[in-house]
Length: 553
Image (cartoon, rainbow, N blue to C red):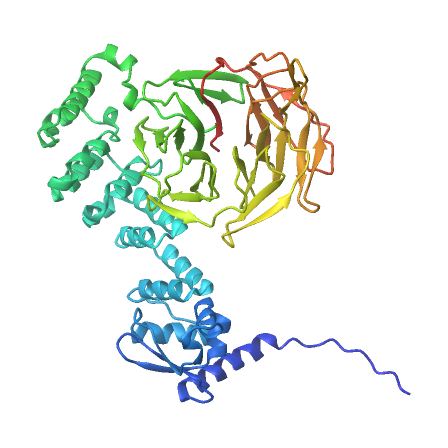
């Protein structure tokens, strides 16, 4: 028998798929083999095939693949979408192709979101981001804010900051709310030929709806860089300011600053220079900032900085404080030093932990599985899928876009996937009982230090740990890693410049230490030659004081 020669298969898949999609679309347009009629809000009918729609859209999959009455219907009316847009979207479902025009793009994006068609959502998002200009950037920012498209909102807002003078000529800023206008004029990307332009357009924004905007304008006026205005300009335009005393005081303060040289040595706190990003140790009404080039800490006091708090996290250029024994969350702006209250949460339980994930603030409730998240772009709270486990004292960390929650009293670790919006639980062992640190560094999760109470008949003794554990996600186990030089508990941990950082803590003599340590972890299979190193100590670290360690990269 003659041996057959092997041949390399020729890949015609792309051409085959294209022809197949076009044929299916032709069937739809001609009504061939159709088993469903989709009716738009304005009564236009489109023949379609349930299997094609279900394969391309989660919305239709839920409609036709479940027990809903539509699964056996031959007609379905879509009340939210008109015929022009529905035809374009259905064509995309069949062929994966669409022509995006500026006059229909937003309607198509709404429809793509409604039908849960992620490739079309991405296509619309990319097209909007690529075609930003001075005439449409604010409109797109408003649209993105309304529909919680965070990345698109960021790009549109940044574009508006870079082109502030152009958009002011279009008068589009008059439609912005306080939060959106504040983000633009406070942005480091703000590009103007003169600070006078910012000031005059802020006044114009206020006068457009003075009755409802005057109080907001007072807050926004504090973000003006008055040191860039001339004293003559301030005097000439002070009559346009709101009549409240705080505005009068602000104008007088800055006139003094301009006219009296000795005042310039003491810039008012509310207008002092922004705090630079980096490693910040916060507490006692002060912020200690680490300079890694000089290996030194500097310290600065702030009268309005919260002093009694349970936790602090960094959100962009803001510090978010959870106030002790309350449901209050305060925001401290590192650029303007302004303190504001975040809107009230939906849940009634007392706060019990928080963490930042994908520019959103996740908050845990006390003795509850309830989790809520705050979106800083929309400035709204949203409920999150409840945790599987009730944690008494949860500690949270972020790694690879997932949220990990552990606690000393639980033998489980709950893991939240941002992609699926769901929790899973993993059994874990050997977590210290008290005072351990929990953080991510260089793509790995770490548990650092901690202590355990050993009780005898007459005395209770604390056993402190040097050990550092790293999480091996492949076998769902914590493994021992390089030990610290000192046995510590109650320290503050974070990740900064790919390093694992600890600040403060208490040793086995119950002494509070101003110790600062750094470790550069490579991976959990390799014991690094770069052991723990001691950095310059904190300037101030007192017992019975609320502290927090944050890194702003």
